[in-house]
Length: 331
Image 1 (cartoon, rainbow, N blue to C red):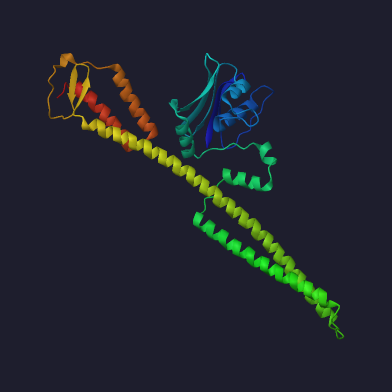
Image 2 (cartoon, rainbow, N blue to C red; image 1 turned 90 degrees about the vertical axis):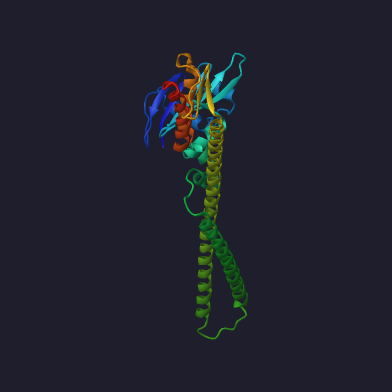
């Protein structure tokens, strides 16, 4: 669930608005009611419907300086988009996850992991056809049903529709035949009522069959829409999982490469990885680069944010071992 919307230099406003499951925002003109909704739409979708999709158009329509920021938070994940105008006048867009710069692909992938939130443009929704409205609703609230069962149900409904079509055709032929022969039959006394009753019965059966056909067609259309929405959601989830797995594999590969080296070097000090070995450089020649310490801590933080606890622990142990050797003087 989205728990916060935030913006800076958005329509002359800067704000951080906490959100609940349902929110009612009220206030006088200019208080920022629509600004909050538009900022959230821009942060999630990357544009506001009807206001242009190019970075320059977005900054011109909503920004009040050369930089515009919109963002939102889902549980413990913070997503931000920054629109910046350079000295040459070009407007670019940068992506941040938990205040760390990210690629557009990582931004989209993390959104998919967090449920891929969607924004509904009510005006555009109401102008759609009934089928488009159904597709839109199923894309926003995909069914959690089994795809195999859905496909089986769709096949059953199609067979049911075919049977109903055949039944309707037979009944129509029967009605046509009865109507054509109605004037040719010399009915004995007392049989006219029976024929009329048979015709009414056939009419009733035809009406019922047509009603069942319509219901079956609607049900089939709904299930096909559900199946399509489920398949699309499954593909997005698989793509996000694949990207995360590839990134974690790259980190494991880097860890393996680092562990192949026997020593870590810091300025004039050589620190053996093997704890049983000894230093060849006296302790008073130790040189520790502060940037190296900052880089190590940054690696650990990023591993905690992007990968599994096991992978993050390996990174932390590897970086910590460097400074333990330094602190112990190589012992």
